Image (cartoon, rainbow, N blue to C red; front, side):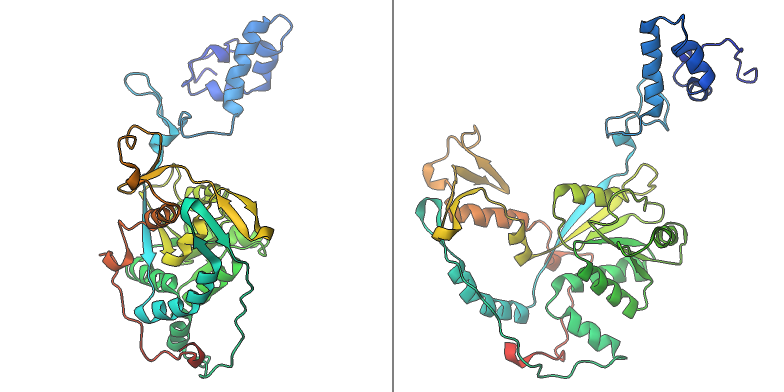
Length: 383
């Protein structure tokens, strides 16, 4: 007490909030029993002191909360947590099929898509229910051997533009720049596939799954966050590992291999790297396949599928650049009715905007698009 310029009868709740001894003394049992719960303490004063104790005990913080690690500036204002966080740069990369893959997909999907829906005036959609089963066929080529790593990867990458793009990013960030990277997936199968590819390339990668016991999880996180030469790639799941972990120590790059089930999971996953103690700006990459964008389309609809018909309630929508505006709105009220989007045009506009045409893999200067090897074994039944 003497070293801090205080006496035994000093009221710690009257000290300045930034006083070095305030927090320790205000939470002491002696101070609480003397100045908060004592018999002669005024109830109003006791309530004010309890507020200060509660502030010290409160664990939940938001972006607008005061950052406790910084004091006041010259004007007496406190720094907010949102101001202390590193900047976040999000880049959406569109992973396109090769010409051969696109042709194969178009051929396989043409008939099912024609049976799926037919757009009619007024937003009405006739849904035709069908069961489409692709009969399995015998492989007409020999699978690569156990030691033929390059051929194994070629087969896996065939038909997966996302994986091809991701491997280019791994080569740039991990192999050439010696950086660590976190990858998020929505399914355990994708986690296993990605980790198997990385280990086949002799890149130290680890999967964070529910099957790991607490000690194994702790060891994995420790290797990723404290050891520079180990565990270069963290393969996590939106459902397991996207909440509560502090992964920012040695990593500021995050990749969304596929889409989370909700926006909350997306924010939680990037929050593992974008934290106050992160010394660098955080770079996040969203890998999108053109066809995967349809999975993110949600439309309010009424009707009964059993009747084979669904009604979409579509109001008056207009597209201005890359923004969709619903009337009435001053920005579109003066536009002619002919520019109003039909049901089909609205769906196409949503998909077009969601694809993020501002930056596509084909025009991305950071990574080059490499041609897929022509000697990859193919299933003749799909030709």
